[in-house]
Length: 183
Ligand code: B4P
Image (cartoon, rainbow, N blue to C red; front, side):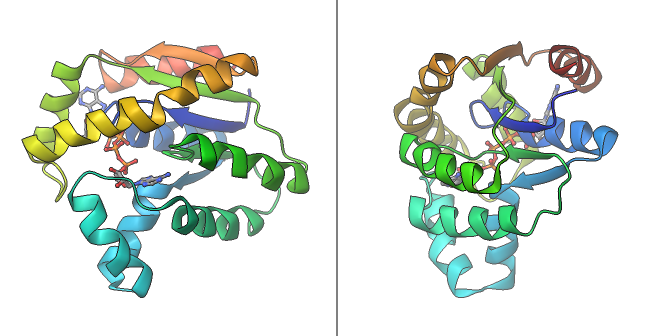
């Protein structure tokens, strides 16, 4: 089983849902930049106040801010496997991750791309009902994904790390598919 992973995919594809299940079953650390940012927002920290308005518009928080969070989390890991969920989300974030992982001597073993049609993504997010889950904001997030995050697909394809997994079906079915491709 590969245990140093990235999860990539459009908003609402189920990255967070699947990452939690894969990490629970395999004793890996789940690092979700979305969850880490929402924790900062709830705590009303300086960082959270800076991130909140950006997230509620469906835009991406600055690379600098997200990188600072990821770096401190990665450096605190104690040898177990890890799954980065929702990070990197831009090519500059991916380029900054490389020297950090080299320093830690922990290269990525696989990048799992969860693929799903826009119509299903929108339905899923509307039923989730988070602060950034209304229709206009969701459409903006999908555009931001295409513009800023989708270039990472060829970035990791070129490194021979990308594995695509269809993300329609039940939560259990998708976990099974992911487990199979990582074995
Ligand atoms: P994230 O928290 O990463 O969230 P997401 O992409 O919207 O959702 P995810 O794919 O994890 O879907 P989920 O499992 O919840 O990002 C939120 C915001 O944070 C971003 O817009 C950005 O502003 C900021 N941010 C985060 N990382 C950043 C970074 N690196 N750089 C800059 N900014 C960053 O599933 C969605 C819904 O579907 C849930 O309700 C779930 O229950 C349901 N679902 C899941 N699987 C299902 C299935 N198989 N069938 C039916 N429903 C399902």
